[in-house]
Length: 207
Image 1 (cartoon, rainbow, N blue to C red):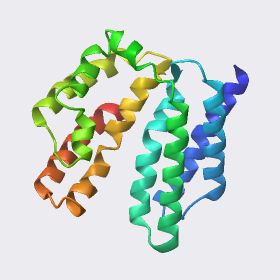
Image 2: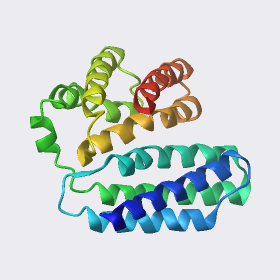
Image 3: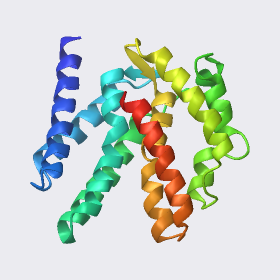
Image 4: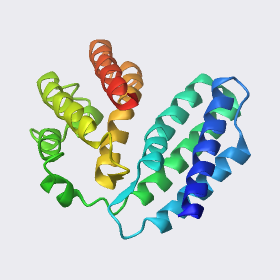
């Protein structure tokens, strides 16, 4: 237990160093990035065969890719490309950590049953966003209410189901669709709706 707590601390510290340096304009911290990947790779093995991960690990996972992707837009040239490459690689490693998500088990858990149902109904909510269909506001409101209820329930939990963490990551990355709708789909009104929805969800997840 002591070793895993140390690994969690190292993971959180390295992720924080990576993001703070970018936030302060100090550029890409290669050592912090390498440590983050090292810890994620370790967690992939440590939590293999189980459906939940410690909340501290989950919380850091949720913000990493989206934060790094956004920072890649704030920098220019080779450094921007380096940050984006790191973001994409971290996303791949996180996805591997969450491979055994236990989605069926999540649907059977009363805490998440309605949340999963509302996300999946009428076409997968996040897939509709990805394909340019815009924000289904009615569906989002139902999802939002259930997400709020689920987060209140898991507040005291020490570990979170991998499938729920994957859902939180999708919510946290909603702001990335803002750029897509602005620059690729040229739907400014939809971009604004998505950003407003993201802001509400971010407040919930960030607490």
